[in-house]
Image (cartoon, rainbow, N blue to C red; front, side, top):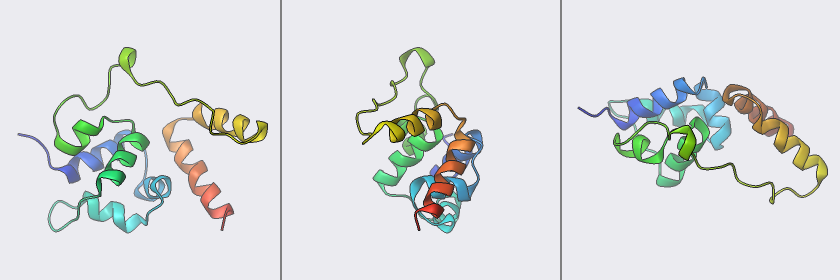
Length: 120
């Protein structure tokens, strides 16, 4: 029997060692949205765009997250390579991006939250 989407979202977040607040910061939503998505009875479902963002932020496959089918994670030898640094605007931004990509997922989420707060 397949698990519900709410359970898979919670499992993906927990396996990425992210709190609801950290995942919310990565996605640019309120923590309450994450709580709603993880609620099995009476909760809501994220949009396809948000579901894609959750999969990317937590390192799980979109198919597994959306449907429960397939592997939770891609095999390391066939994983999609990281996007290039072509989107950076200058050398400082490139150094920052390279450093962030070396961090574990939980620290990346913390950095994202910090940057969001500094940008206010």
